[in-house]
Amino acid sequence: MSKRPRTLDSFFVSPPNKKRQTENAANEVKPQNQAQSKHTTYPFAVAELPTDLQEILQFVPSSEGRDIADQPDLDLVYYQPYIPKGAEKELFEFLRQNLFFYRVKYSIKRGPVETQINTPRFTTVFGLDESSRFSPDGSVIVDAASQKPVPKDRYQCQPRPIPQCLDSLRILAENVTGCKFNFTLVNYYASGDDSISYHSDDERFLGVDPAIASMSLGARRDFLMKHKPTAAKHSSETQPMKMPMASGDMILMRGKTQSNWLHSIPKRKGGEAEKGRINITFRRAKVKGGTENYYRYNVGQGDVYRWDPGSRSMVIWKG
Ligand SMILES: O=C(O)CCC(=O)C(=O)O
Ligand SMILES: [Fe+2]
Image (cartoon, rainbow, N blue to C red; front, side, top):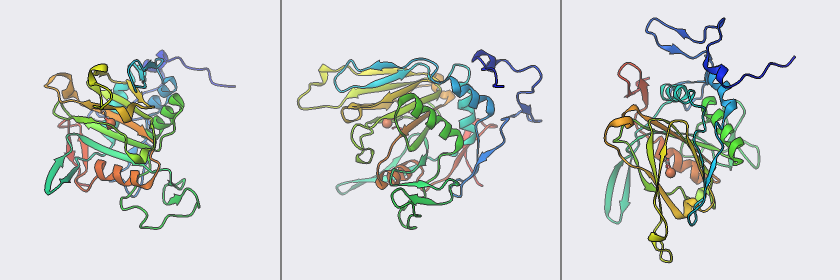
């Protein structure tokens, strides 16, 4: 006999005869699902999604996406919300608690001048470009064409398989958008001082007109967009946009958007931003250069950070 389908509401009431979560002496909430994603490249194992969250994800998208294409070269789908209300808070806490993050530093050279850049947010990344894939157990990287293990020096970086908790979200994003993704990039904006400046994700390694799905959890932060300056088009022909990305919202950017528009998350003074915000983007890198780029700028060579529930802040993880 098949199981009776549950309604969304029933997920938010604890079943009477089932203890939903176990609490230890420190009152720390433990997920029901103790299984973990492990890999030699991970500083520590990543818990799999708790079963209650896994089940709620059947109800994604929580609302129909709204097309926004009323300006030149703009092609967006905005889900407000995407994750069911009530579940996004648990998903936010779970991911902040269980992922490892980095504060990447790098230098750029413009002519003779070298500038040190401190990425103003926490980042982490998982995935592999189209030219190769992980074997099912994740132990080897296999060439997509020959199906043979790739030579050791194929990648300078050490690619990481997407842990189960993020891979479930990736598969969901594929099903909802009809796009294919092989990378998951995660940003954590700890406070209003963390930000990402105006840019477009139009790197060659993503191919033409890339689709990028971008999910928000935690603090509401403004997502700003403006058209790139062009010779032909006066910027006054287009209107800059401000989208209040709330917890559980998702925006899909596709078509000509990346080649023509810039986006940013500006710094904010105090308020809600201090609660912290997670952004997850799903993308598809076509070639090896994409893999190298993503690990260089989102993992780097520095310290590993992990959320510390005691001090409620990211602290350097000492292994
Ligand atoms: O945090 C966001 O919403 C945007 C992040 C972003 O644009 C990026 O990672 O490329
Ligand atoms: Fe971006």
